[in-house]
Amino acid sequence: AGEEGEDEEFVCEKVYKGLYLGSKKAANPQVLLARGITHVFAVGKNLPPTLGPGDADVARTITPTCAAEEVQYVYNKDGLVYMCLEVEDAVDTSLLNYSFGANNFIKEALADDRARVLIMCEDGTSLAPTMLGTFLICERGATVAVALGHLINANPLVNLNKGYQRHLRFLERAGGKLPDWVMPP
Image 1: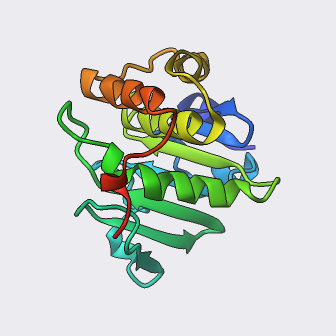
Image 2: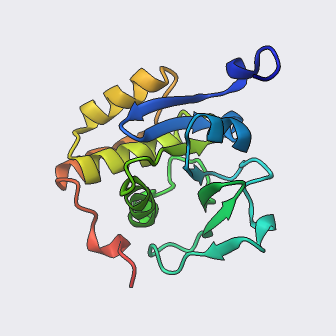
């Protein structure tokens, strides 16, 4: 079903029950639906054109989901529910600011046992794994080692920068509890 080599372009692997990790190459709605994906959490600046604020007619800005200023929005398109977060993939980007909203989106999606959530970024190696690791630590009680084990098993190219590694270790030390200062007002 599709052109030769189509599956080789698809970068999406199961990490945990109902949770998938992927790159922007995984963003084809028809392929996602065929694989049972129901929700997409896209994080980063270089999202595919179909995942952007240009879809304002179907998008709603999330307010408030975090204490941060960056754009977050949710919309339904092509039979999928998207949450998009526009942030730079940089060592000094504090992803704690977005964890509450991201975790809630994923948790609410997984309330339906049939849901499958793709967490994706540019290449599936940094931002998305950090946000998925955050969910596993905060919502599933995983340690950093267990979360990274799941992530690396899904994508051996996972390579979190030092800032994102600190982020996950902080959450582990806090017992998976997000600090009050990242909660919405």
